[in-house]
Length: 372
Image (cartoon, rainbow, N blue to C red; front, side, top):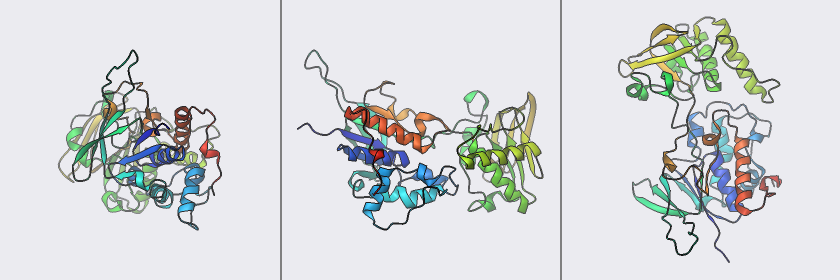
């Protein structure tokens, strides 16, 4: 009997955990790596409510495993809109720590690089050599693990886009990076005191920026000396295009609210479209920033106390930069493969297709099984 394929899954977020479970269900040998805890990236924005219901963010395969592990476990209903933190606590962590995956789980172990072992040609056909996976554990010790297939599910949250024009950092941005907020801040919760009564520049025009501007506007209603400058590269008018008959009603409501704020510019909000940045310099820790650029070609600048950059994220390819772009057996799944509008259900469909290819069974669909 041939040995089962060895599958290395990098990233223990929603897509990585589901991919590892699918691999196990197919009978493959699995190792699931993450440099931090399960769902670390999701926890960074975990206070925010998802605009897709719980039923679209889990799978029948995963639900069956969670329920099998702990009978009677209370789970959200399919139609419930949960926060990212609730998704991790109620579903993702129990799934990763289930009997099916616990032995495959390698937390606090960072995958530094993935390469291909050198092929020694023993015949006219070169043998396909395994991947070499360089891993560093929590104590700093390094080792090389072998894998026949690598699934890169690392996401993009560690590599935000640059603030400067032309895709490069603005002047001073690199030095100020540690003082800029790059993700979804818990403005109405843990970070309220950090933003209440402050002048804030918000950069971005996607759904993350929409979430942030709505929170800042609500904050300003109770803290009247809060002032927000919303900078967008997009045209005048509504910064977020609404999708006709958007099936995700929560997403549409968010766009409507953010567009209304941008159009009215009521109270303590200024919206500046067609704006590109040339400078984001810090005056020192907690001493404010100078933000400068061009708005519709006219020079503009602001002196503010806080900067929030909701500018999206880019794929970090350093993990596999020694491999060919089309390396057989290396698959990039999840947000890293699809860009900013990625939905978890799309990642689960990617998983199904990968394992249909690996098993040679085009009709393979383990998600079609009903949850127990």
